[in-house]
Length: 63
Image (cartoon, rainbow, N blue to C red; front, side, top):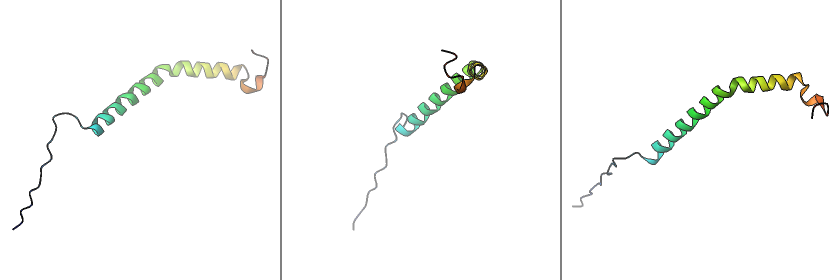
C-alpha cells in the first residue's frame, strides 16, 4: 500500500509579497492623487496664463 502524504503549506505570519506590492501601489497611488488635487489650482492658473499669452502661436513675442 502506497501512502501519499500531502504537505501542508506553512502559513507565514507576515505579509506575502503580492499583498505587500498591492499595499505599496495603493499608497503611491493615493499620494499621487493627493499631490494632483493639491496642485490643481496652480496648474489651471498656469494654463490660463499660457492661453492668454498666445500659446504655441505666440512664437518669439514672449521670451
